[in-house]
Image 1 (spheres, rainbow, N blue to C red):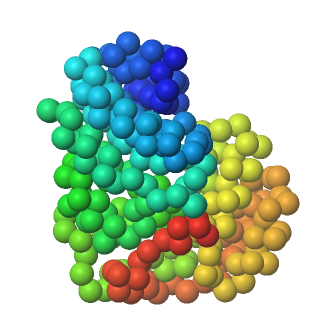
Image 2: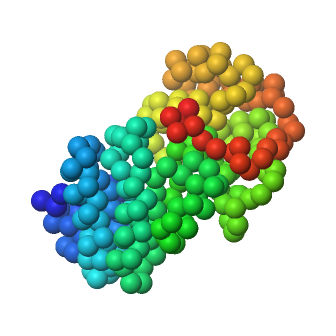
Length: 239
């Protein structure tokens, strides 16, 4: 059994490739290198050391992209990602693009990981929770000065659209439960949001939840917010 969780993401999402990337990645596949859920420091170093040869083997087997998640999944809030291993993976492959992931919480982080590792793309996770609009500002150069963020009114509009999409993607009750955390992320910092969340967290009728969100939206500012790009950061704790 291969010690890493190596996934191919053009098949069933999250399906482990028993035997490693050479046997599991097919022509045109996407190799997703990640650590097991947890382990001590020695195991972490041993697992990370295996990433570059795994990436090279995946490329040889026909992978067209390699994504690198350089930390234990369960340690996301207490361990820093090892960006150095992303650079080693990039050095190990010859042709395929490498996507780096981990601890990207600001525009400066996105730029820094590109510079330090020479990776071709950056994958963003917790920074985007409740902030899907940040991708608009990640094209091209790092934004300077002030950037326009959606108004609170616009954010609720995006949240409702997200909610409806989730209802079309998952069974109804699972979608309702899954969206509770997203409601918290989208509404952070809004006046009256705490009492709204307290009510929505117990509701199971999605249309009732959406109706409450639309009523709440009408109480919010419609003017967009301008902030310095340097302040557009995520709380690493995910709040």
